Image (cartoon, rainbow, N blue to C red):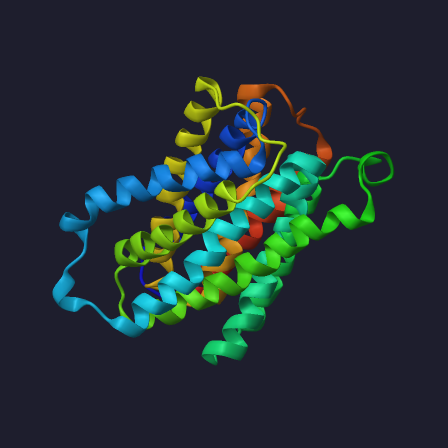
Length: 290
């Protein structure tokens, strides 16, 4: 494993976790679909501006570009919509808890689509991260009080799509290992998808306001950075190494909410979840670097 892969994945998780916090604030002012139609194009614009400095067109690979575009239709576009909708319907607690299962789907997809060998240590680490994230995020009684079973489709679908998309992105990066190229092509496809969905929308649209635009624009920039970092990590390491680390982003969300938003109270359950999550990632890193 490249020595930069783990730090890049950790930074990506940090950004994804911060993006959950800013999107939570943004949802006070805009609905999920409108928020996605602001956040994703904002990041896309930044990527387009940076393209001349980060992407060598002489290295262009059509097959890889088509893969990046296809992945982009689902991630971040569809995943963002599913995550924002889940955040809106169920709150960040349940959304983050279920999102922690994404590396399990990513590993399965990598094994089936790429033929990756999944080491037992990586699989155990992924399960441990999922358990740690669940402990970090779950609130006793949340299921009985706030969740209709049908609403769980949003975070579950998001976890599945996120996992499969990571394996798909890895396939493209094997052909063209430029994370910026993967990001700009994927985000262009994502922007077309979310803007098109917003234009076809009928009724229920909230009036755009400066607070909503600001918070979702910031969310877009943070998530865009997270995607570049994730792709850079995937270009340097197997999915089984990167996916569990990325899935630890709720640790950042919970701690950030406790410190900055005062929405979380640190207790033994959250501390236990943090310890399990960090230990799992540390063990995975130790194994992969030996």
